[in-house]
Amino acid sequence: MHGSRLTRRGRVVVAALWMVLVALAALPIVQYVGGTSAEVETVRVEVQPGDTLWQLAREVDPDGDPRAVVDAIMGLNGLTSGADIRPGDTLTVPAEGR
Image (cartoon, rainbow, N blue to C red; front, side):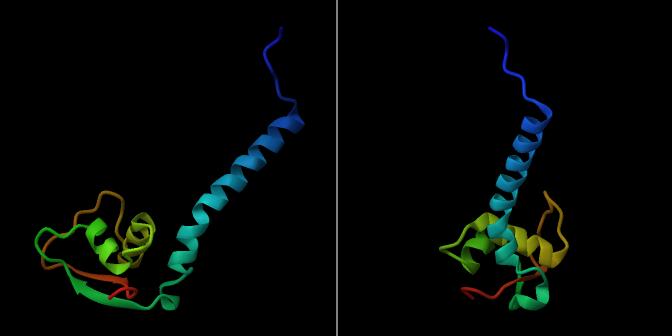
């Protein structure tokens, strides 16, 4: 029995399916951020000792997906993955739940 091989058309279909799945997975984040910071009502908060982006995200939207909120906070503040926040820093966060 031969191993399964995809035709060129099959590879295109599989690639298109993956792109659709990735787009659907990213949709909640894009919807939460709203495209631009002008469309998201925000507030400024001062980071307290022990605060993390994850904790701030849970305070902003206790029932939402904290990953999407962390991404929004990072985007609003120009933070990169692995960025540290320190007590006394002032961050812009979405206003939901505040």
